[in-house]
Image (cartoon, rainbow, N blue to C red; front, side):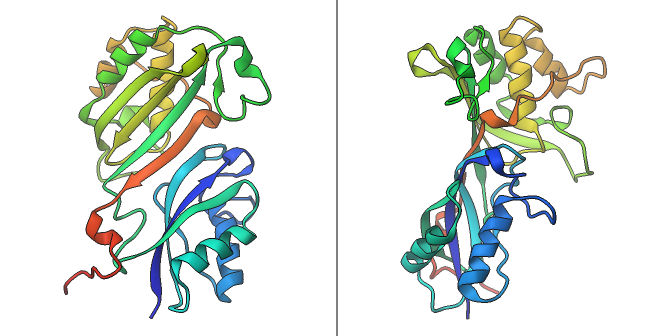
Length: 261
């Protein structure tokens, strides 16, 4: 019987076309599954906690995989990292319940967005990993705008509506703009039970425009109420966005736990 494992994956998204496997592009899922196939001798499907877009990074993306019983977490961790490319790495591997699924079992996810407001944000040592805005913003206005999205709201207007969904409601637990050290800019941290496509980047783009005094804070209220006379700002660039972590019920992280029939 196969064992089920949770991998915590870090990657620099600059040279990936996102997480999801594609036939003609380099993706994180594709690279990881190639490595797993080499180790196991058959195809293994890797399930990610989120489907990051091209250019988006991850600090701890949860990934679940089922592998033959001969594998343990220590050997798996070492073997995967020996074969992964340099822009992708497993930082932790653990055996979990067979009923665990990295996406379906997640109860919350956290993203972080990095904004550079100083002139040096355009440095080649920084611009791949943040939005090199290069101008000051009113952080107090941005923080006030972020508070407006706390709680349960319909984020239909703050997402790319590429496919029909049963609903567009998300419960936002935290949403905070805070200053980065050294006067280099700000970062936005948001935790919610679910996220829609481009939702974080649209929230960042809209709140940054508020911080640049291009639009009022009240625009977020109007977007959440589906005001047809108002639009979001353009989405923030992908390179500033990081998938930080997913949260899971403790019992599903225990390999001895099984769902009763």
